[in-house]
Length: 109
Length: 116
Image (tube, rainbow over all chains, first blue to last red):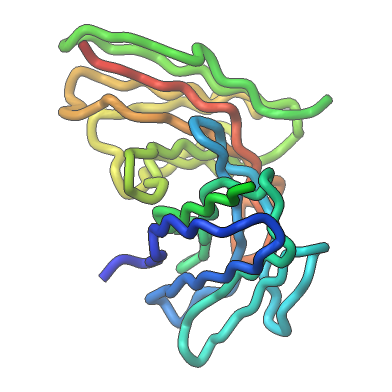
């Protein structure tokens, strides 16, 4: 079983729509969780950390469900500029981070 | 502005040749990492270094070597022993060597290596 699994998508949504997707992780001892955004042929960039109580950053909301071992990302009022691949990142042990393969979101006009 | 630079951006190599990818950071970060990204897969850790003059193998270290002689530099050598080296290589750094602290890592722009 992979350490981090994501639905690859693509999720094709119209501008203004809400889109949400999950990521599951296998190691219950994981303590840090992040969402990164990666544009085509570019490096990943931190979108937001995910906290136990859930957190928002503008139009983005992240949730953590430790019991079911998944995190989620919700994007409200989608913009064309939100089109990207979203990487789920989890730390399964002290020294490393594990990356999902990414969920691709395409926002259309 | 602080950040991570990687060079070259594109690199072409003939089979049997060793190549070295450069990674420099001016963020004063202690920890540095090398990842490899292949289409449809998550980033995989090649090597990491939590402090100068020390480094550890990641999940896919075979065929690669690194050095960490200076805090700001962490070059990666792809040797001829690496069987499938064509990939996107990403260098990253973090202020805190322990990912459990919740401190995220910063990535460089990457090097695309193609073996001809």
